[in-house]
Structures are given as C-alpha cells and as structure tokens.
Image (cartoon, rainbow over all chains, first blue to last red; front, side):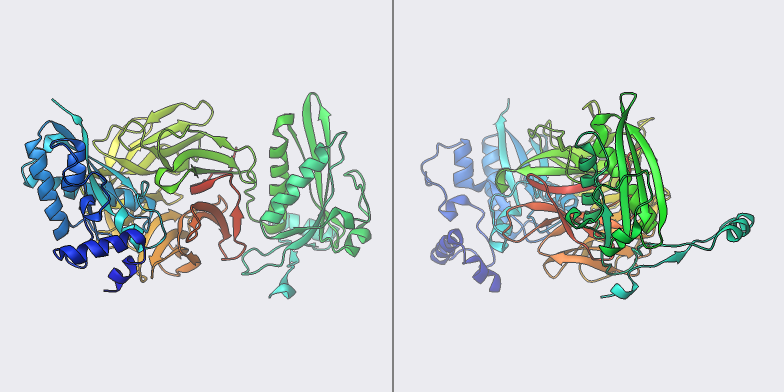
Length: 171
Length: 439
C-alpha cells in the first residue's frame, strides 16, 4: 500500500492509477506492462497496422518490469510476454533483440550483469512460448539507459525493465 | 581538535650502528618538523612557498602549482605571499629564519628555474624554519613543456619529506565524463592530471564507455565499451590511441582490471543469467576461468602481491565480498555487515579493501581489513560508488550522485575519513581510476 501511495505522486502514475481503477483487472502491486494501458499511445488500439512495429509496441506491449534486484518474470509480465510470443510467432520474419535494464540504485558492474540476467529470463520465457531461440539476441545496458528520470521509486520501477526490440525484418 | 599534538618532532633514527656512533659524535640528534598523517584530524601545517627565482613568470607558476598541490592534500596551509617579510628568498643563501617564524611558517620552500642546454633546470630547497635546518634540496631537468610535472615532483618531495608517505601529486585520474540529459547521456573516456590540468578526452562519445582502469606498468587503460553493439572489454594505448579487443569471449565482458604485474586483465564474462571471472594473459592470449557459479561474480581486484583476488558475488543471495586465490578455487566470504557490498578494491599497501556498501537506501564508501574485520565507513549518502586508491594507499577517490543533482561528480577522501574534496571536472564524471605513479 505504501508503495502504491508513493507512486501516485507523479502525474503519469496518477493516470495509471485511474486506468487501473477503471479496468479493475490488475493487482494493486503490478505496474502496467502495456503502454496502451498507460494512455501513452496517441494512435490507440486501432491506429497501427497489424504486423508493424507500432502494432507490437502499442497493442502488444514491448516491455516488462521487474521488482528490485530481481529477474523473476512477474505475473503481469507473463501476460505481456504471452502476447509478445503470440505476435512474434505470427510475424516470424522479425529478428528480436531483448534489452535488459536495471535501475540506478545499484552499482555499475552488478547492474550490467543484472540487466543481462533479466534479458535472459525474458528470452527463456519467450522461447518456452514457442519463439525460436535463434531469432533472439540479448544485450544488457545495466543502469546506463534509464527511460524515467527522477530520484525516487516512481522512476526506478520503470527503469527495471526488459524491452523487446524488433531488430528489422529478417529473411 | 588535537592541535596540541600537531607537530611531531621525531628523533631521527640511526639505522647503521657504526654510522650512528660517528654521527652522534658529530652532532646532536635532529628534531625536524613532521606531520603524522595517521591521526584522525590534522591541523594543516603552515608553510611558506616562495615564488621560484626565474627570468620569466615560470618560477611563480611552478610555486603556484606546488602550493595548490600541498593545499589540496588537506595537510598543508600555504601562507599568503602578501604576509612574507622577505619578499624574494632564493635558494643560494640561508634564509633569515626569524622572519619566517614571525609569520608562523613551519617550513619554507624556495627555488630557482633556469634554462640550461635548451632544457629547464629546477632547483628547490625545503627549510625547517624553527630548527633552522635544510630538510631537502634537489634539482631536476626537463623539457619546458613539462614544467607542471616538475612542480608536482617538487610537491611530492615536500610531502614525502614532511609526512614520510609517498606523494601522489604527479599521478593522473581516468574517468568516464558524462554530458547531456540522463536518458541520452554521452560518456567519454577522459584522463587528467591529479590537479585537473592536461585534460584529454580519449573517445569520441559515439560508444558508451565505462570503468577505465590504468595499467600498472604501461601507458594503457583497460575499459568497457558498447562499440560495435556487443559490450566488451578493450585495451587502449594512451600514446597512440590504438585500441584492441581483450579476448574473444562468447558474451558480454565487463569490469576489467589489470593484474599487479600488468600482464593479465581480469574481468567478468556474462553467459545467460550468470557472470563468472576470467583472466586473459596479454602475451600468450590464454584465457583462464576462475569462478564457476550460477551467480553474478564480478568486480575482481588483485592483492598487490598478485596472490589473491577479492570480488563481489550474489551467490549467497545478495552482493557480498569474497576472497580467493589468484588461481581461483574456493572463495571465502569476508563481508558480513548489514546490507550488500560491492566494487571491492585491494589497497596498494595490501592492508585494506575499499568497497561500496548499500544499506538502508544509502550508498557508502568504506574500508575493511582483508579478513573482513575492522569495517569503517568513510562517507554515506544518497549515492556514493566505485572507490579507487591513491598509489600511497592513503586517499580514496569515488563518484557521488546527489539526490536531485542531475549527475555524478568525483570526490576524494582520506583514509581517516577526513579531508573530503570535490574534484572539479568540466562535466559530469564517474568511474574514477587513480593512476599509478608515473615513471
């Protein structure tokens, strides 16, 4: 509860709180893994052509989030990865890069390894869902590429992530 | 305050017995000015550093660099030249000590810079004004463009004579400078003299670079770069700018450091979810695996004699410090305090290990003995990380991110926990490495 309260301090998180309250389908602890849920996408669910990168990012959700110092795929993240796997299996020409990231509340070297561990866990989940391992490359950026910039938990929780990047249409 | 014990006028110890007798017959035992740097707080010693005699302004420039070096150490308080009674003391005559004692100068530095055979000749003398004796007198020759280096050598000589510890003013710092917003920060490998002069950027900023470490024996740095898409450990020749990949590993390599003899690079190799520690011999190219755990083993650092390695591992659940033999094998955990421990670095004197500690949402820099006992925290705050030792094992440099501060900056702190200094850099700076003493 305390954590939820802390999150509500930032404006985007307030929006999130509203979305969660309306949808009522996510646990209170979980952060959204779908940018569409966040209301961040201008295009909306129907704005992206099926099979495009935009479709993947907007309608499937390209990223999952992790708990502090953990590479366990959370229940909410599993939902996202199942959608990702379904989509990736349908559009099999995309090469895939999974980027693992850590928040800035760790030391440089460990966070590089932690990001790699998160990317590997994400890859393994997708492979278990039928995505070919040969299509997937992983890379860790440690704490070097935060997406949310502030010095409290509302940002750190968004930076602990694995992002599935479509690496260009392969053969 | 322990100012009463400020000056320790130690009796000179006679080592060779015969010599001792002869000297004892010739003169009484000396009692010269000295600073005990092992004390917690030290009131800075007032010293007069006169402009060196020279035909142009270079004598004043050199005296200025010497004074700034000594002041930055926190152990010396250079006296304002406006207070000098004798304006232009040279190195050729004995000073009028009374005129220096009146302004409370415990020691006096004088010198001369002259041209000799196309080179620069620097002479300097250090006087104990209360004992009325010369403590040191040396001369150096160099190219004119190396005048700052001469100043650092003189500052080192003064520091060494008055503290009996190795001076480190002639060393350099390597670090990752950072520019731009946090989401798109551009990092460049940068080196500079210990006083911030001669700053050189070694990479262009196109590739993300981290954790530079100096070779103990050559003009080389090992570091990690994301160039080419795969994060890898590289070697960079400082003179030529030539860069080479270290090893051909099947995965991310990171957290590199040289062995004390400079012949090996020790680093982590990431494979799937775990990281293990490897070495590569730079001559034979042979790689050796030292750990085989299903955990994250990283931040390896050799003991100065090369016989042991300290590293961090989360094999017990959280990041803790472990020590193993240089050939690998069983590792023994040495950190047992509350929280997690990381980025261990073995002291050049061999007696201590510096680390980053995370506890209660705070990041601290601390030291412990090599068996894990005697833990001492030197600084605590929102984010302090990545200590590196001065070659004399008495000062640590690290980086600090203040909450809301926007980015990291470099700091140094004495082993005593005192004399914390911000190290000015033109932009954000992290991942500091203290160079060995230049040859």
